[in-house]
Amino acid sequence: MSDIGKVGLKDVIKNPIRDFGSFSLTNLINFVESGIPFIKSEAIQNGYIDFSQLAFITEEVHKLLSKSIVNKGDVLFTKIGAIGRGAIYDGRLGVCNSNAASAKITINEVVANSSFILHILLSEETKRFFEKRIISTPPRLNLKDLYELRFPMPVNTIEQDKIASILTTIDCVIERTEAAIEKYKSIKQGMMQDLFTRGIDAKTGKLRPKHEDAPELYKKTKLGLIPKEWEITNNLISTYIKGRIGWEGLKASEFISEGPHLVTGTDLINGKVNWSTCYHIGELRFQEAPSIHLQNDDLLITKDGSIGKTAIVENCPQKAILNSGLFVLRCKDESYYNKFLYYILNTEIFYSHLRKTQGGSTINHLYQREFEKFEFPIPHKSEQMEIINTLINLEKKIWQEENYLSKMKYIKNGLMQDLLTGKKRVKVEYGS
View 1 (cartoon, rainbow, N blue to C red):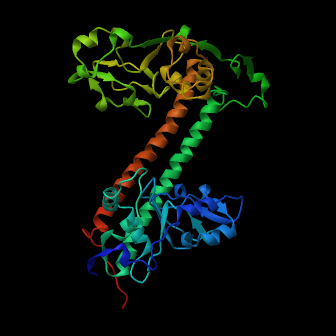
View 2 (view 1 turned 120 degrees about the vertical axis):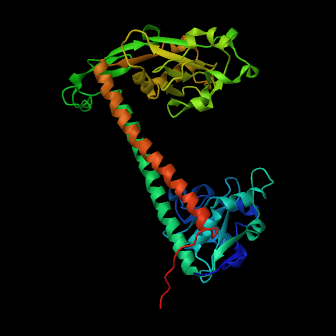
View 3 (view 1 turned 45 degrees about the vertical axis):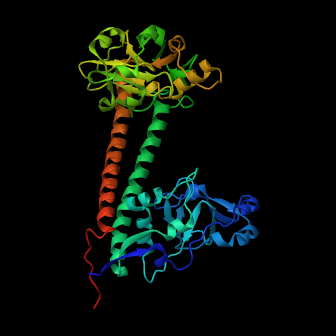
């Protein structure tokens, strides 16, 4: 097993660390439709380059920006704005160029593994080191800050290779999981559009055919085409809507450590109420506003600030109440499930209503009188439940992938802490 020594970034580079050079050179850049690939700093993510965000410059400009020419194997590290993202350019597009917000680091592979050094740059220890050196706005690192970075490193590159391989493997798992999450989210978004315009056929258990394929299954309404069996209702007819009124307003000085839960907009996370972040109020203040006491299956929506954030109340404490900035909604005529309206409020059906009521102005408040006018389509409750279950199953897949992603990131952080500091060593078999 090789020794571990403390080295500086300056000890493992092949060439001086470079960036774009003089900012006056930015005047030379005019992006073109094709040419030399130009890697913007926003394309540099944690461990990979998002090639969909590339731009292009001319050959002439590329030659003038000689300091920032990027070759296969170069490490790119963001040093202005969103500091601390890094990736290795894999050479897939040939020679590239990069902008002033990133540093180009060419590693001497005789003494260090580029992937190992990249993981050092992305570690929490390095992040904390650089945070102490950021003094400007927007955040900025100087090249000298990179030169001053020191870290433990196995002397033998075989051990470095093994560590880099372990961390790269888990990076690949994380990347695949993130891609799966995005895929399921995209499927859900498309499915919601179909479910609330076509619904589910009771006979087949599948989406109804599109209108152009089966026009006899649809009817024209003020909301557009909907299945023949569906009806249109509005909040005034079907929905109990209550919010905290002015005289019931609470002051921060009234918040206490125990007592009835007070739900604010910031407590709505991913469609649920995070009870652990709620404030608490006294019993008297709770009892004076019974119309906004909460119960399981209530639907909540924010009406101020980030308008339209929604949640369904689950695992409701014995006593919970709204703060200002939210409405509580309940179906009052049994025509729909609250969960069905929850999904409706996250579709273009509701977003379109918001735009119309705001008259194109910046949306900063959801007025109850306008919200009561909101019209939406409703199928029979059995079909509503089919729609709800379809979306819940998709959400379960997303939730499972997100939990797995969190687990993998936790494992990676632990491995980085152990392997990149020398706290734990990897077994290395040397050739004879």
